[in-house]
Amino acid sequence: MYNVVIARYGEIGIKGRNRYIFEDKLVKNIKNSLKELGKLNVYKQYGRIYIDVEDYDYETIIDEAKKVFGIVALTPAIKLENDYDKLKKAALELVKEKIEFEDVKTFKVESKRTDKSFRLNSMEMSRDIGGYILSNLGDKIKVDVHNPDVKVEAEMRAECAVVYVDKIEGYGGLPIGTNGKAMVLLSGGIDSPVAAWMIAKRGVEIEVIHYHSYPFTSERSKEKVEDLARILSKYCGRIKMHNVNLLPIQKEINKNCKEEEMTIISRRFMMRIAQRVALSRGCNALVTGESIGQVASQTIQGLTVTNSSVDIPVFRPLIAMDKSEIVEFAKKIGTYETSIIPEEDCCTVFLPKNPVTKPKLEKIIKSEENLDVEKLIDEAVENIEVKEIMF
Ligand code: ATP
Ligand code: MG
Image 1 (cartoon, helix red, strand yellow):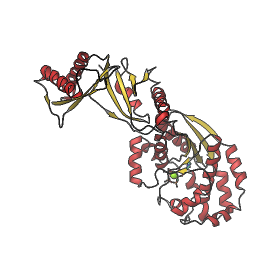
Image 2 (image 1 turned 120 degrees about the vertical axis):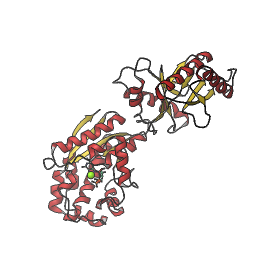
Image 3 (image 1 turned 90 degrees about the vertical axis):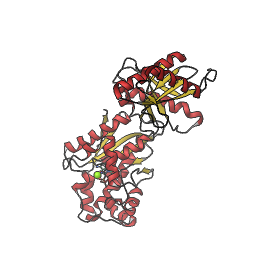
Image 4 (image 1 turned 45 degrees about the horizontal axis):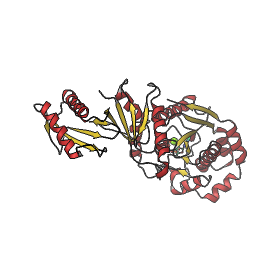
């Protein structure tokens, strides 16, 4: 019955004259998300995006398109030429379906008339369509304007007529690719995939960098992080993943610095390497899954010392979230089950018994004087393994 799905978008990034950039990107991203299902016609018409679904299962299309950032809601609809009688008939058919399959007992009609030359105003349209439905189905359904089981929305537009009854919520945000690019430090944990998702939702294209300590950490632990990136790619499209072996650096720190400074100095190396790779890839910010006070290295002092190793902005979308909130989020986006698979992490390999919780920057810089920082970074970067991850 449905022949289109309407993709609604709310916020338009960097508004005004750039509106079309946003809309065109959204159309492109929707097409991309559906390309496995076929070559669907996705198009913009008078400030709206439609997906032609006549020959497809619209529910599958909605499930896929829902993951595209920038979409606030998806509405399966019947789109017709702007012929009022046809619109009424289509509205009736939709209500019939609802009665048959969902056992609805009450309805309400809400109308819109963007074609101001049309003889009825929106109030009159609603009354007329409602009356028409009652005259056909009055024994099965009643009007309830306050709390209807089904709300029929009918529109007479200049270019077409549209009617629909359902709305499926999207995630909102902005289309990926409209807000630059960032490099996410992706571990195998619960937090960083959520952080990546949140930043991507704001229209930022992401690449990911992961640190392992192979052969101290297993091949499997790397695959787990790839699996996480693959889940993210459902939302973000293809993701470039940079795998870095941190072991040589960890050994050097272990040999030359104080045990309790191991974690914080390793983190500074992670940040520096991430920045180096980020800039070479056109990414102008880093993203981490840190949250104040979650672990020893995430005290304000710890974050300050970590931060000061790089110059580009570091985005920490989870900074004020509780672990339980992050867990809920991870479940919602589908990364949780993978994140909790037990695998060792590079940070646990040399975990100090008593890590510093209030590191002093001057002291850490002093300790780093025992290392050839630039050379270690160069070597780590030279040995990076790059992979394209896609769902
Ligand atoms: P997560 O659940 O994301 O692993 P966490 O609570 O375990 O986070 P830390 O291990 O202190 O916290 O890491 C803080 C952040 O540093 C992570 O969210 C991630 O962005 C980055 N990070 C930590 N370990 C790695 C790694 N092995 N590779 C890439 N990034 C990492
Ligand atoms: Mg971790």
